[in-house]
Image 1 (cartoon, rainbow, N blue to C red):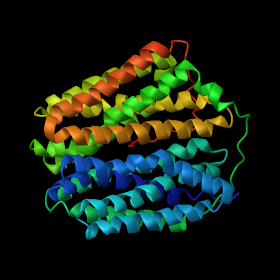
Image 2: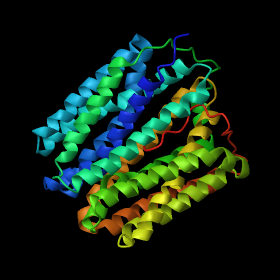
Image 3: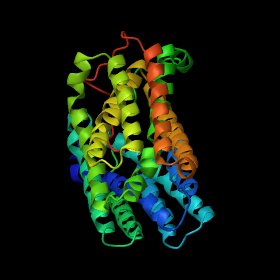
Image 4: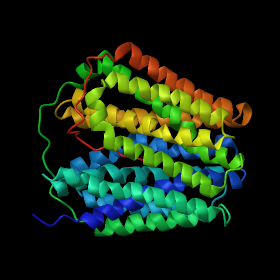
Length: 395
């Protein structure tokens, strides 16, 4: 067997999530500096969620049918960088929407394919995945803190240069990634319709949609909210980093947590924490302590929630249906749910204000809480000891 290309894979994860760390918190501030309305900002940023609804499934289908996985990864890096480069001379909504859609379509294609590539390289050493994947979290933290400190000293356009350099790093790593023999998927395929007719499955999917909708305003407007209330860009970066550290800590503890508490109890606590989090985010922004607490709750509202949900999907969609279950989970939650949350927050931000916009996020979380409360029973258990796929921080 060929030697594991650990550092080439680690480098890809580092730059991929570094892009999220520079883009998600600060690109909205750049758009605000161009005098875009909150609706325009929400519409532009929602393209990332829109393309996640079908982009990964499209590219996965193409690779499954025609092969050339590593070629698609490299193509995604090249076109993603080209699409983003258009922002250097675009400053009107129609052109920026096209550029954002191109960036999102190709950028969303890469990570699922790199994940399968990584596991094909690891083969029977899947326990080493965490040692490679952790560099993504390191990249995010360095990027979010470094970009925040930079933007305290330069104009918001500086975020374009940072993101372009990081995307060039993604492309560079993609060009040196080696292919690995793909392993056949085993197991029988359960009828997907029969699985989806289960009340607990429908309730979980609906609750996941609601949780991502609750986070839509957070991912688009949290930095704008903090900056507008006097927080320095460095402080914004520190708060984003704190959220990532909280979710990593929860991921490390999830096996122990799942042994002590039922899936239902974990999810109920996560959704209740989201209600509290978004209410505080909207109405207590003047308190630094409250914002620190808000970001610590990210460990529950993303970390524990996502780890539990992805483990449940892996178990409730057995055999070959696991892939379709994970695709459905990703499309409904991070795709459709995130899209709705981003658009609703953009629509309400200027007219209703931040407090009520984030309160709508709390309302989405409450709806998810009620779905879990009613239809996910205490007998719904999952095995967190050997998950099919390690959850991805900094979504």
